Length: 350
Image (cartoon, rainbow, N blue to C red; front, side, top):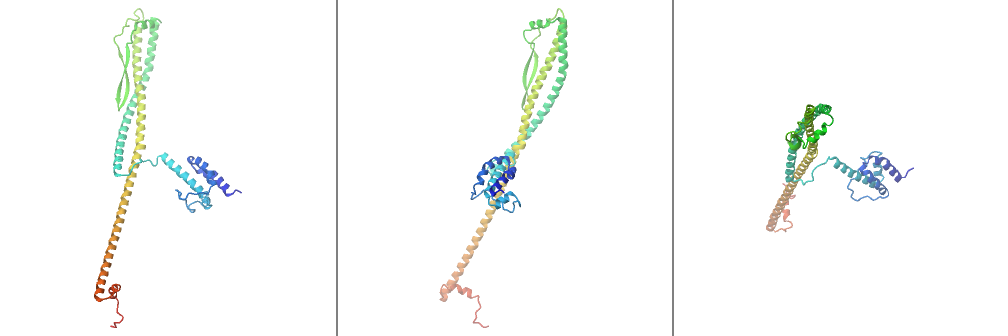
C-alpha cells in the first residue's frame, strides 16, 4: 500500500499532469520534487485556496486540501494562472493598448480609430482595383500564350522554308549584313492605384539594311521569315510585359491584403478594446466621484446636525444656569429645574 507522499506523487504524475498545459508541465515537473519534501506555505498567497465544498467529492485537489497539502495546490494554481495569462496574451483575447484612462487619451484613441477606419476603406478599394487589373492582365496573358504557339510555329516554318530555298548558308549571310539590332525594347512604368507596373514596348531603330539579302535566290522567303519573327518578337515583348506586371500585381495585392487584414483583425479591435477600457474606467471614476460626493454630503449633514444639537444643548444649559442664579440653586442642579418642570408633583392631590 502506498504511503501518503507516494500516493500524491503517483496521482499528480498520472492524473494532474495530463490536465496541465504544456507551457506549465515542464516547470511543474521541476518544482514537483521540491513541493513534496517541504511543507512551507506562503503567508499571503496571491491565489485564494478554494473551499473544500467546491472541490469534487473524491477529487484529488479535495484530498490534498483536506490532507493539509496546501502548498501543492498553491504551486499548481500559480503555474496554471501564469499559463492562462500567457495563453490569453498569445490568443489575442485581451488585446488593448497600454494607455492611461483619461479623457484626452480617449480622444486620441478615437482619432486613431477614425484614421484606421479610413485607411482600411482606402486599402480595401485599392485591393479591389488591383484585383480587377490583375484579372484583366490574366486574361491578356492567356490570350497571348494561346496566340504565341501559332505565331512561333509559323515563324519556324518560315525559317525552314528560307533555309530550304536559299540554302543553309543564309544565316551566315544575314549575320554578316547586320551591324546593329533593328528592333529594340524599352521600358517605362505605369501607375495603377499607387503600384508602379513595368511596361515593355519594342521600336524600330532606323531602316533595315538587309533588304537585298537572298537576292540571288530565296529573297522572298527570307523577307517572309523576317516578318514572321518580327511578329513573334512583338508577342514575346507583350507577354513579358504582361507577366512582369502580373507578378508585380500579385505581390502588391498580397501586401495590401495583409495590411487590410491587419487593420481589420488587429489594429481596429485593439483600438476598440482600448476605447471600451477607457470608457469603463472613466465611468468607474465617475461613479466613485459620485459616491464620494454623497459620502461627503452625508458627513457634512451629520456634522451640521451635531453642531445644531450641541448649540441647542448649550442654550438649554445657559437658560438653566440663569434660572439657577436667580433662584439661588447650585449650578449642578440647575439643569434639573427644566426637567422637573415637566414631571407631576406627588404632593398635589388635585
